[in-house]
Length: 184
Image (cartoon, rainbow, N blue to C red):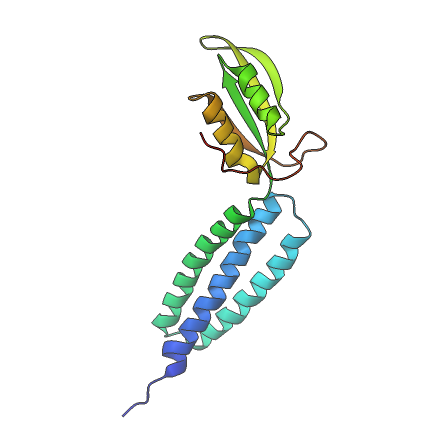
């Protein structure tokens, strides 16, 4: 009677799952840090990520017939991607520019945003249906929900777009994070 191979069937798949989970989470964060200009942290995460990956692949190659290890690899990759995205969302790093285009209510919205501590630049323009005002505000990503609530509460139905800013200098930013508990 054969003995149960605990290592190949249970321990290795669990180790592969954990290693791949950590490796992919770090990889996701590394890519995000790189795109956000955090160049000092990204190489460190890359080193750890690849070190884990190489060590894990070596173990899988030793047990090439372990379908359980393959499953652990795939499941770890999926969960690592998911958790990496959740972490990035929680950290809310980065700076954004919000472009708001209004036919009416620009003065009221400008006042509300400035009262909340945000800098606003106003530009007159011509839209498809006549005169419009373009409002620009540069915000920390952690404040995007609060700014969006101000826009929705002040000018329901306003058109706006949000883009990432690679770098911003000076400007007017709230001294402390804006509470997102603001009611609509």
